[in-house]
Amino acid sequence: MTRIEIVAEPGVPQVVVTREFAAPASRLLRAHTEPDLLARWLGPDEVDLTVDVLEPRDGGRWRYTQTDPKGERFSFFGLYHGTPSTQGIVQTYEFDRQPGRVYLNTITFSERGERTVLRQNTVFQSVQDRDFYVRGGMEVGLRASLDKLDALVTSREGDDHVVAG
Image (cartoon, rainbow, N blue to C red; front, side, top):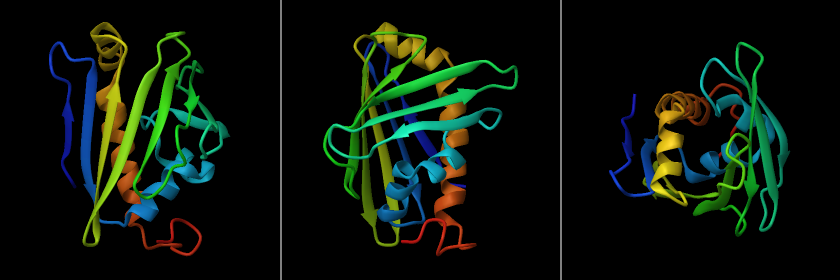
């Protein structure tokens, strides 16, 4: 298993996540921008994810809803800034339980031979907003999501129809 680095420095309204994958950036991009693939890896293990809208283009919208085992629903949504590419994705990020609190999420894909380093930098409006995100189970969800993403992008089973490079 590849190590996940999560940095949330005290007093800084930011969380930086880094993880390396044994896959090209094109696979990671597809997993982030195709609804059927996104639904397979994003979110903690115990929730179901429904992709409501996914328009991966400059100005495009995205929205997904997670349903927990008790049937409670949580929605996340935002806009793309620039067209997602193998270089990265820039998007805003909002949580329906925190209206008006917009995060800026920048994901970069840096290829190193046959491996790619994913770096996600999330900037919040305040340290309090960042702390709300962290207290809400961010680390558990991120670790589970990135483990599932790793399994998806490194899978050779069904390569042609799943995440071809």
